[in-house]
Image (tube, rainbow, N blue to C red; front, side):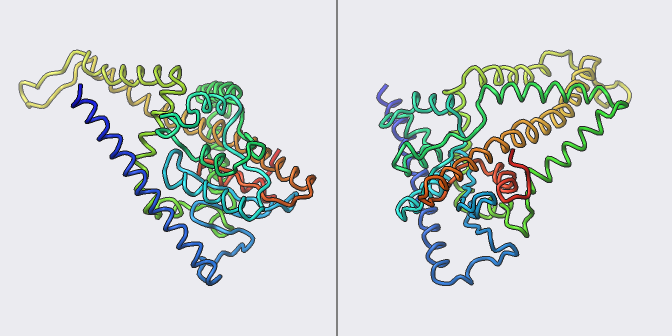
Length: 349
């Protein structure tokens, strides 16, 4: 028992130390970046669209409808570097008295569950600390927080409709189903992933993969994210894990083949051929269904909701007469689609 406790304490200490080192590195890097930018405006990477300012994984610009300053913070969920970026961005604007609201990629149901499972001072608050909590803490005022994402209840219904539509299109190649799939993939990638394009100030892949500190924090993110799902939404993670385990077990349950007596080559049994065909079909279905689900339900629909929430916060700022800006803390995949809508290049409704 003592050795188990000691091992557990050692593991937690190592986890905490790694997270702290990555965050410290990111903090120093951010300070150096901002200091260099203040010393010389020519130190920034030249942009063809000077109305957009890139800073690490954040984009700053003016909302086209209201003229309010908007900063989109793109994050890798649960990554210490993203946590630091969200916190420092909100803190900087708050201290300059230039913050009207912080829009989080969350909804009332999810936020309530987060507050319930991770109350201030609890172990889980520290263990599964994320960029949303960090931004809310940095704001220092609960009235400044806006929950801007699609309701999780609506997201589930939207995902089911998307899967049903995809199934119908897959089974209707002659009626235009396959054409609709291709069109949705093409349009979805152009609008939600590419956004305004690199030359016009969107978030680039290099902004993520060339950030050494962010990459160093990936193991923490990859551990915390599924752990948070397992704790907060066991009804989702348990069936998924059971399905994955079952699929892994299938090959061991079929009758194996044998070596050909003449050639010595391995000949699969009928059951093995059937399982191979099944796995191939599942691989194709995974690409078709998951890609459309990602582009339509998880990005397009939610980006409409997120951009509308940010626009609402901007309109609040104008009505208040305070002139404060709006910070939105989002998953990095949402940034370009949301920016496209807010800068007038896409419909935000």
